[in-house]
Image 1 (cartoon, helix red, strand yellow):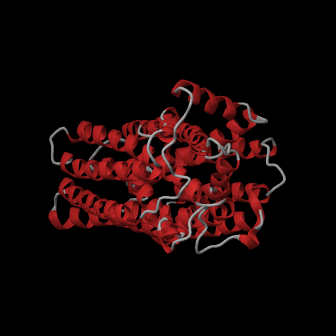
Image 2 (cartoon, helix red, strand yellow):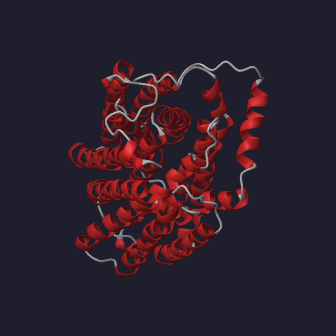
Image 3 (tube, one colour):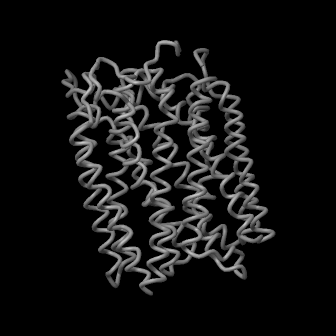
Length: 430
């Protein structure tokens, strides 16, 4: 890459007006992408734990909510063919606003668990579709150098969305639990706030999201099945495809199990093997300080990938992602005071942010120029499968082994993904 030619104020192909600066739309787009993802996959874990659902059921059902991100590759080509990425973004964000409002109301029902899971499942499909459109828009609107540079920025605002979700919303729900003496009402108000924020984002993007010339309606001279066939064929005919698939699937397998049981571990009483934190404390430890550390790690990781390239960054970042999982082993065995919990969780989250930067850029690196959106959707779908399957059984494994041995297993499962780094093709441009 010729990094001297990058324009960090524009970074847009075929555009020249001030509104085309990535700084004006990348932050809000990825904040909007992050909010529903974190609510569906992480905040829901805390919600159900506080409303009395057991760990095995929480891990099973919230892991199944990953399914839309696994199979989004099935409808990814449709977003490539029909309409523009900008319209897809606006439509999905409108639908997400309605889903968040419905989620808030569902918690006031007697059968809240079933109804809220259904709403979260619909939200997951909408969020996965929004992700496809957002990533496609990102790759169409930014040139290759800008894509590498802004990966840290997009990750930062995705992480800020995590702070908003697992930090602010959880902390607010915890405070409302105590003041209102009504857990479900506290969570209803918190999700109502999320719906309001999303409604504002829809208005902002409707007014200010640019339309690059490359993001235009496509007219194809072949059928949709033919287009699907070309997308699949070009993806799976890549050099060393089996190594690529193993890398994508296994790289975050330890993290996939950790993320489902970390909040219950922090909330469970010490006699059950947990740390006995309150809802508000989890919002501060895991959601605010942890997410801030994750954000800093994401910014640094994006800069390092931009500076040194994917090839030189992957192994150090894999170590940064996986080694801090040992902190949870320490926390489970020693059950220290909260003063130790804050820094150790923050360091683990910093490593998570740092460790996923090169991983994300690699998906762009292997995407065919003609089918960028669809190929990126396939890669992220395989990644989601690697998050979903371990999560499905993580609750049962934790209940069988206890938190101490469970976190040892989590650390051991990081090894296969690290080994795949020695077999994937990386090329010479990085």
